[in-house]
Image 1 (cartoon, one colour):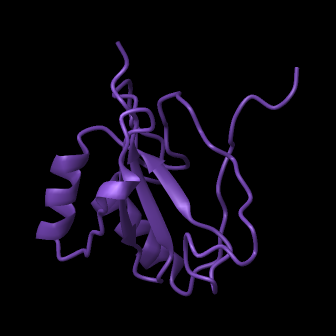
Image 2 (tube, rainbow, N blue to C red; image 1 turned 180 degrees about the vertical axis):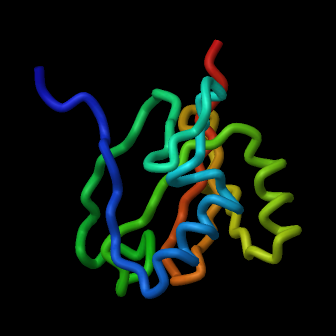
Length: 128
């Protein structure tokens, strides 16, 4: 059998401990987090729920995210409106654009972590 999914995302940070805490506290992402709602979270990894994942290299001159960054994280979410409200209440700038949203692809919002990495929040369309 071949590859069956992502096993991790590793990237450099100026302050890894602070960035880990930011992702955990504001997005529920990272070691010690459990999106499945089943069992106790592991101190070593983030338990996620299965679903679609886009794996797509972008052109080097793309303006979809900052030119000085090599990646953008896309996180699949539920209840994007409530998440946006929580993030804004925490003082995190949230960008939304009507043209990003479409019934066939879902809804999107964009934030940045404390080190300036773009994070796209994606709520897939409801399935029938």
